[in-house]
Image (tube, rainbow, N blue to C red; front, top):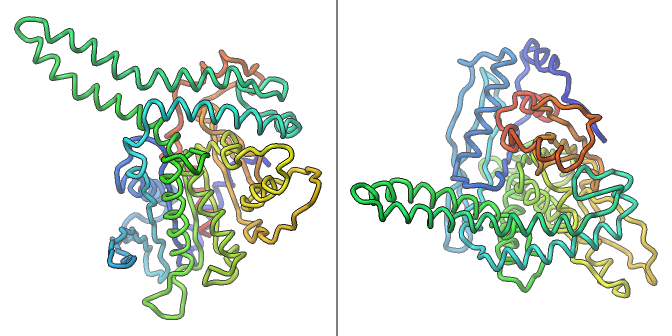
Length: 429
């Protein structure tokens, strides 16, 4: 399903009616890949939200921001979580903004060999997935140079990943070798070397860790050391969402939040998706201390690669492994499209989704090669941001995608007032 931004006049109507939010609400924001620092994501999101409100006519001097803390304890371990609470005027209702920070879990964890092994594994997984789902690829006309007439181009896909996997780590080595030549220049060579060395080291490390984030979180083999990193992040994401759902006011009987929004960017959309899938399991198994969860939650993704990573969610099985195949298929219940497959014996699935109707809005841009429409999931509203003008009838070949790598719009969403207004109109009011 494809759509546009909600009618922006609605936000002015909300302001004119004097209506702030009418329920205590929380937003949990997941950051994406990159050299992320704690509180950067929280800072960007809260500023973007406030700017959208003020741009719509809400009075700046009526906003009141409070730095709150949540105390967590597990065994003897105690830690504190930073929260930004937003209040407006005399309204008793507040919006609490949380950040899910995961960059420290993947930093410097992936070697060059890990990258190459991952590329080989993922390429095979992609080929198998799209061979099995060829009718869906043709139906959705996957918007990528890796598809031609609905057919997955494995060779181009693998070559592209290999090139990225080799180029990024080699970038640092080549730069260091060039800089080393300056050390032999008399009278000032060492100064030039020291001046640029640390900067180039930092850039190289950032590029390597960007790819490392993707590899670390998408290791499909449970025996691989990197799978433990993925599992740890997944568990923490689930705990964070569960905490907001079950949190009560001052240890009383009333729940803290009447509305909870999960917002995520880039690789963070996959982490948030996994967390919601685990919450779906816990609801089905009676492991959530609250009813009517579906009415509480909303899901927002921007710069998401979830369609491109659809095959990450499934370990491919052999044709005769119909029991294993169904176990794997049944594990991902949240927003999954069902694929009609005739098995020798059908295994009844008791782990049915309880979060089918959660409102999910996905924002993407043509100049952001990471993102795109999400077609392999149910009940998703896709919104194209159109940061750069383009001709929709232009033939999408390799030259098309090269031209649309600049400007690279993957981070533009954070400052897009339309997106924040959409959140306010569609989720908070």
